[in-house]
Image (cartoon, rainbow, N blue to C red; front, side):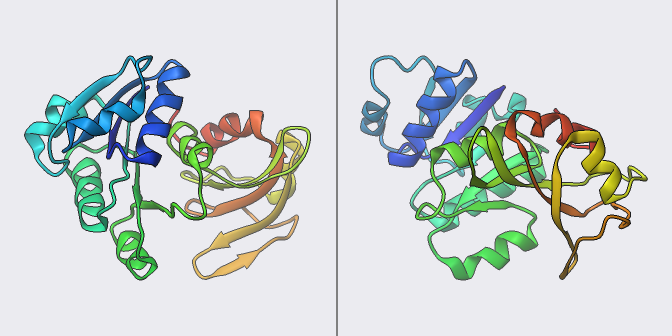
Length: 214
């Protein structure tokens, strides 16, 4: 994947390093060129000095071919603007933005932008959101099993029982509008969010089956 990260602070640099080490193509943007020292000498990605809301800077970072973008500066306003540019202008499907002020979360939701809180979500969780489209890890249990949320992006004409049987998992709930439901006979619908307990290694296959792009 080609991933653009805006903000080379502690979180941004750690995320960029992890993704690059996994073999992804990474471009990271920061207004302070000294910030790139956090990446270390082994970082083989692209380092772009400039303000993240400048489209010329973003184009230099390769936003036009990006599969995912993370806006993780220390400024909520910049993060939401960068996320909007990525989502609305460049049609990037996997966009996340870091927020410090929890009161802004509803505004991000109105723009259909995924948000992360630096105090409750670490590098691995953010990486999973970027890489595993439509999948959010809520809790990690034992033996590779996790509690996940997976978005349903197409009608699959299956019940909860059918999904559990086909993918060897347990559905503990379905978020549908403002309610949470969970019955074996419930038909899974487009725009539902499934809360499942399953082997994390199988999550991407389920996400693709439910209409999330790979």
